[in-house]
Image (cartoon, rainbow, N blue to C red; front, side, top):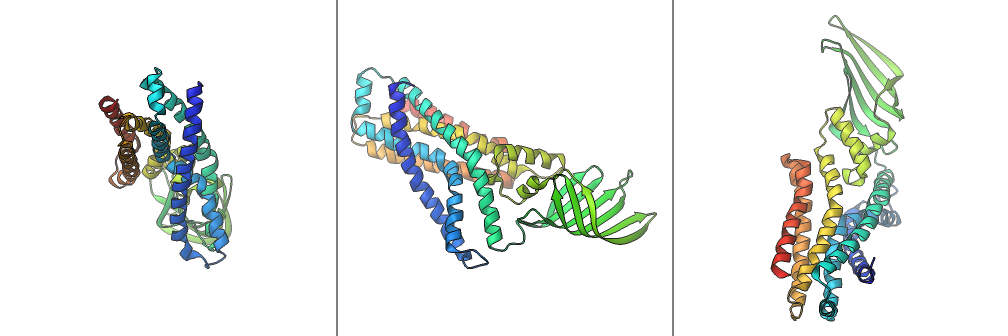
Length: 354
């Protein structure tokens, strides 16, 4: 990297860090206030709430990083413009393309760090914070649903209504069909333990259907084999945003193989892939707002306009995910349309102001 690249990297790293601290603080306070009503329930104390809020910090970092890149870029480059450093660079023969190349390098370097945090640290701590919260509140389940989760294993269908924080599953029904598509065997279990892909059904009521007659029996436990392992079970009760890209990919494949709805997880998967690109584009978008009328005393207004546009765009891109799930829009389109729109906006800004 050239001297200019290192200079911009150090400058923008400071500003982006400052912006992240502010944004993460607001985000953390909002969640803290939202959860404070649960303090006193079970073993959920104020120190535990603080710990859980801190555990969520890497997740906030990854979520807010794109908008922090824009605001940090505007503030850092705006400072250079106010101190006439950008004017001096241009007078020394530095072109806008040179600045753009340096910004791109800086954006890639900082985005690489955010990806490491977002994929290696944040998902693990987010998942652990949710499981810890459930245990402290003495929650019996991390997933409880009227229709539950359906799994297909050949001609056998499994329905799970509850998943506990320790990985134990409850209220399980197993339906087996013969070659003609007729129900031949049914099991209802109070709970089950899972090790790898080996299940042990507990307190089982079993019904066999032969020639139109039902034969019922009870067992304290029964073995059962399924593709769903312990990690996948816990993922069923965890918000998709708390999973890594790899975990999302595997879980989406599992849902599709078992003919389950996967749109929510697909939106999160493609959004996580698009997020680094959005961050880099937002940093690039900061340059036109700073370079426009570089000698003008209205640079502050341009900075505020850039921040406003960037924040609004970020909020819209977040909202598109929910709309896509509700209205059944293609997850790829939902996740990557903000990238296309942002690219068009950047082309417009560069052509008009630079």
